[in-house]
Image 1: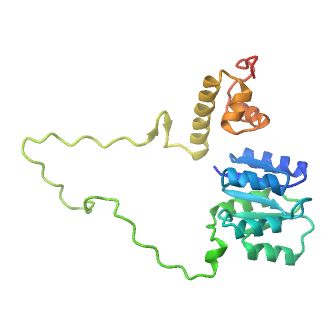
Image 2 (image 1 turned 30 degrees about the vertical axis):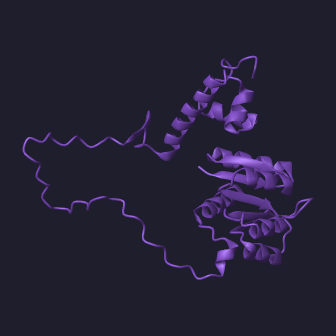
Image 3 (image 1 turned 90 degrees about the horizontal axis):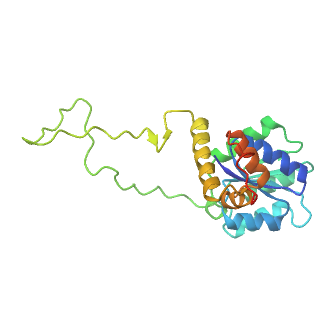
Length: 237
């Protein structure tokens, strides 16, 4: 799923949005001001940002302008506010925000807006006024033309070994790809966290650092995946 950065100075809003998005399978990072948002953005580009307009140090629109001028606005940004005017929302959209959420934010509206934002391509501000050139043709994928439907199969040389059966690509390790995405993701995450628990000697502190999840989210995720942390905790965790 997506890596989402939530920027809001209200701890209640951050926790609420984090829990909702986390339950949907997203990885969530939190920032309570523009300084923390800058650090998070430079550390790793998120797939989407939920950015509050009114913050005590630097407001969200100013931060949006900063990212745009530095060429860092290459991810969808959704603005949030409970007191913004229409002019402010229009300005944010002009700078590069893809949408606007008015507080209080409902669950349905949040999920719908986030899904639409993640599905929407982001065009950098420097490119919006230019006429896009047609993309160059991609290099061919096949080294030989694919067989046409109904065409006879190529004859094999006399004495040649029969063709090997097609490789079964329906599994990724132990994970079957012929199952719903959520189930495949849960299976992968179960293997992923069991690996880190083993290699970090079940220290929840080190697993939290290694996986980039806050301890509260880590415990919740392990419980959701059915991994029993109570009997696996060590004195180091």
